[in-house]
Length: 289
Image 1 (cartoon, rainbow, N blue to C red):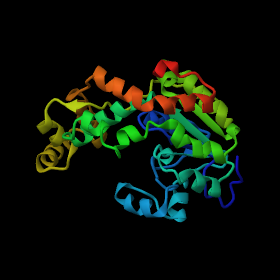
Image 2: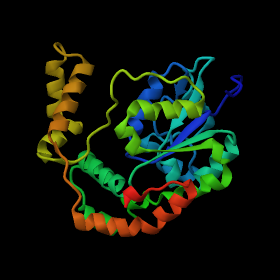
Image 3: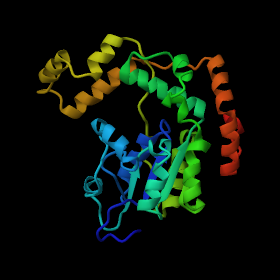
Image 4: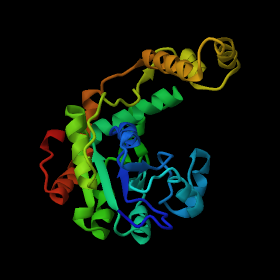
């Protein structure tokens, strides 16, 4: 644990990837008594300054003072951590993190890049409700849905700057199979006691809204929603109203399978990068193919 006096930066950072249960991992660290996790998930702090400024509407933190405030709730015996799953997608982030905290521990959780890309697309469908087809996204040269699956290319800058013992790569497959074992591995890497989980952690479900009208009614600020909240306020607290709204949103979502032809196209797209990733991690990932 780093000296607590005049602290600024965390002891560990989860740098990626998206759609790997990061919200559940964040909640686990919130529950762990020996971890002070940054108050905000996805701070964007360790990305180039001009890009941070552009992301301020999405909550990007641009000053060291504001970043330090993320850990204002820390207790003396806690380690500090941050989860910003976008860091691995910015080539400059590895250098920025290394310059500020060369002894930091880094966590990356990887998911089959094909499934990650489609899951990310389905979440966009849930959030936006009306986007281009996945085939269109797939063939767009700058699509973040596919670009963020080139794990070897994106993680290599971290392996070039940090000692291997400071980097831990875990897999979403293991998270799905046994959450307790997955979190035990995280705790061992961070040198903190394992925390028995009482319930399974669950993230948000992505997919296509069955009723676009209902989806927009429940997910955007609008007059009808405000009137409904006002009428229900005397009978239901904000937490219960939010739970009901999330349940209605989830019931309105249909999760569709990725067509076989598109899966084959993605498999070819990632083939070379996956082979290099296996060599980098010294791990067989044949099941992803």
